[in-house]
Image 1 (cartoon, rainbow, N blue to C red):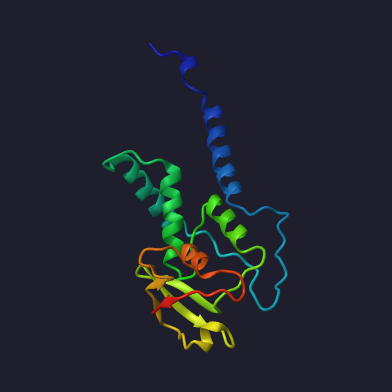
Image 2 (cartoon, rainbow, N blue to C red; image 1 turned 180 degrees about the horizontal axis):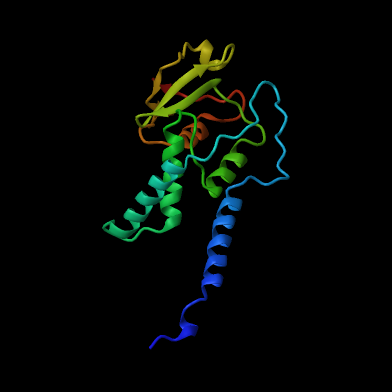
Length: 181
């Protein structure tokens, strides 16, 4: 025997479907109060749409790792590693810093310090000179773009992070730092 209360009335069901369709269409519309931002210095102010297909793929991989990886991995670790991977593949100067490392970098770059006058990056685990800065100790010593720094004050650099290497190459103005190229 059918119980009428177990099934929605056709008019209620139709209303729910219409609201669902309307709500879905409404949710896809941009907010009315979002006026386009004026262009500044030749840069387009329009944002590219989110790459939904790529984000779906990312979410699928994330779910598969969580479901089938040999040991449990938490979301925070997976997402931080994904961010690190994105940034490390952009260029040798980009890196993700966790809050503690960022605070340490801020502290190490404040106050009085001297530098060698080189821009460095990490490539294949080595510290690589990207560019010497004109009229600095590095340029006067003949350091060139592409040089690999294998030791800083006698300590091997293989596997050091860029932050660690830069910290080892900083000191008070006029202090000596020995680099092995």
